[in-house]
Image 1 (tube, rainbow, N blue to C red):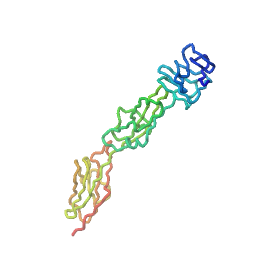
Image 2 (tube, helix red, strand yellow):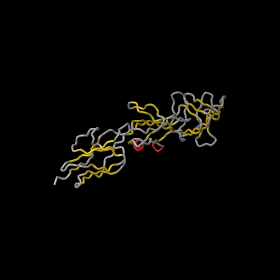
Image 3 (cartoon, rainbow, N blue to C red):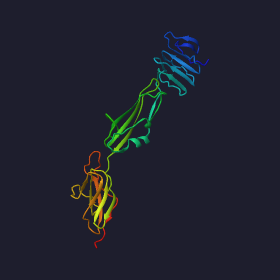
Image 4 (cartoon, helix red, strand yellow):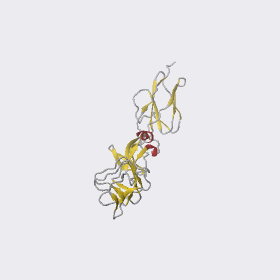
Length: 278
C-alpha cells in the first residue's frame, strides 16, 4: 500500500502488514499532509531488513530521532526535514575556494591582518546552514599547526580552517588551506636621470625607511659602505660629484630588515652613463 515497512511490533499508524501501534509510542507513518511525506514519532530505530521507498520526505520533529540499522546508509533520493536527528548522519562538506585564498590570503606584508569571509568557501549539507567558524593556525612543517588567537598580520606561512557545526541530519565538516604572507621588498626608485651639466644622479624614492647607494661597479655593495644614504620620506634623491664618462648603478634596500621586511640589496634595473669630459 506504499507505506514504510516497520517490523517487530514497533510503529503507529498503518504499517506494511496493516495497522500497528507500538507500545512505546515510537513509529513512522504517512503524514496527514500526503505528498509522499512520513512523520516520525519518538526515538525510532529501524530494524534490520527494513526498506524505505525512494522519492519520499521524512519529517522528524524536534525531540524525535530516526536511526538506521548498523551498516545501513541513507538513500540519496530521500529528503529529511524537521528539527530532529538521524543516525548515521549524512555527510556535509566545506570547500574553500583556492582563488579566494590567492586573492585574500596569499599576499605581501602590509601591516594589516588577513580577512576571509563567506564568499571564500561553500557549505554543502543541511538546508539551514549551521554555525560556520573560521580559525587561523600556524604552519608545522607543511601541515596545519597550533590555533592562533587572531588572524595573522606578520610575514610567514599559515593555515585557515573553515568549520561547519553538526546538525541533526549532517555531520560536522571542515577544510583547511595553507597560505603565505610574503616579506615586503623595498621599492625601486623611479625616473632615474643624470644631469649632464652638474654631473648629478637624480631619482624619485617612495616612502621612508629605505637606503640607497650609487656605485661604479655591478658588484653588490657592502652594508657598511659609507656611501649609503638613508631616506625617511618620499621625494627626490640626488647623488653628487659623479665622474665623467662613467657607468653608474643605483642600489636600494630597507634600512632595517626584520621579520616583515626583506634584507635583500637590490640593483635598479636601469643604469646610466655620464657624458665624456669636455
